[in-house]
Picture 1 (cartoon, rainbow, N blue to C red):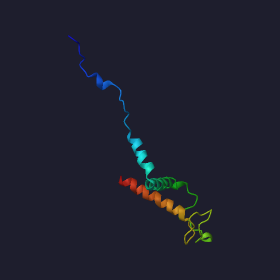
Picture 2 (picture 1 turned 90 degrees about the horizontal axis):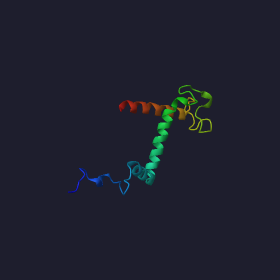
Picture 3 (picture 1 turned 60 degrees about the vertical axis):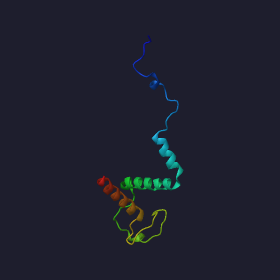
Picture 4 (picture 1 turned 90 degrees about the vertical axis):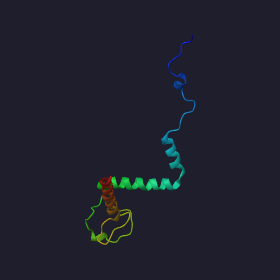
Length: 106
């Protein structure tokens, strides 16, 4: 009479084929679609600019009539509005408010 083990030894053998991970599948999909990469870049830049809104160099509401209605330049990347406020600073501040509202909804 042979002694038999109470378990099937074949289930403890190492896998011959390594299963692909979920992360690898996601990277394959993301890297293959250029539209998705552009959308990710836009999302990342929106989130990073919203988080860095407190580090902007111009005051949000301080008018500067000497530089009003300027075209984009090296000092004001998106120009200035009717009363001299920096447009990029105001967009970044608005992005921060939008992110705060979105965070409260979740």
